[in-house]
Length: 109
Image (cartoon, rainbow, N blue to C red; front, side):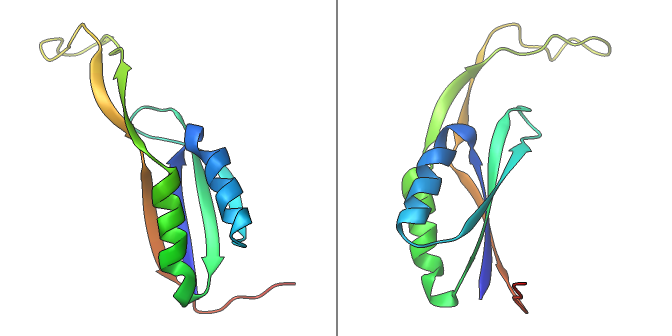
């Protein structure tokens, strides 16, 4: 058995959850916050049999797309302003960060 932990952008979370349920995956959905952009993410914890991991990963990949987004930089309050960029910067957001962990034991009470 494996535990899949997938961190996805909030925009992708509802579609992903629907596809997981449609394919008989049980998932726990947790609200989380990204460290870089400090924006909302959703973390899914999905327990599944070893032979279903690749299928679950395909569902995640197909439903969590990367996209370009403009962000406005925050001006420095203190310190060196030499590296401050005063105009919006385009960055890549979205997609999914996925961890697959072995599960030693699963109990349900």
